[in-house]
Image (cartoon, rainbow, N blue to C red; front, side, top):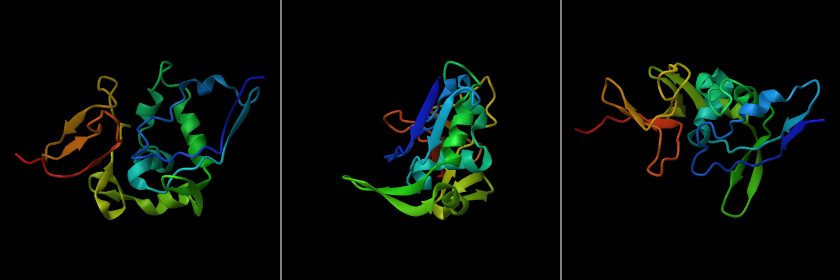
Length: 176
């Protein structure tokens, strides 16, 4: 019997959980009727700045197109796996340099209060961090790019200086 056990992991997500880092394209090769699947009680910090893309996907399906394109087997497994991971997440964690402690708040309950719709799209609370939706990205565009500008002169940079995907952006005017 094939299967997958993915439970009770703690994702500190320092400084952020990179976009699509939880991708599992081959997940669709495991049949729920013939495979043992145990995805449960994985823990994440309740921080929209760290988990913006994951919260937006879990609540609103943001990034579903791009997530489906991740990996060698396009369109297979990743979104189903991440949806299951989000839906079965355990309590949030708070971590310091030595240990992580469980909190009483659940990830989905946190997302209810942390995400808000703005004129520009979806953002993390009132702190100005917009969550990039890759869901409308065409097949001809790279789903994860270095940076994109918009017509209002704001910069939307999704990779940090070390080329780590941030999955979110600050909406600030570009100085000329």
